[in-house]
Length: 64
Image (cartoon, rainbow, N blue to C red; front, side, top):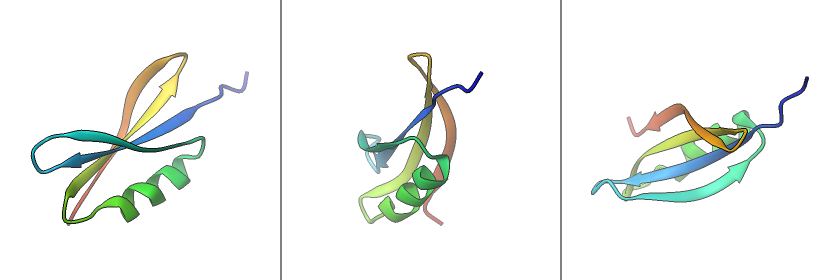
């Protein structure tokens, strides 16, 4: 069966504070959002995959 998935992009600030940036149903789009969200304040973005009401860490996009 086709499992419907949603991805949440969270930004992590230098002090460790996490904030939800955006949700999307495309991992490719989530990666794009994460890359574009890395700023002076946001040191990394964590992409979570939501499946059956559970959040799983998919990948981390960090500033180089």
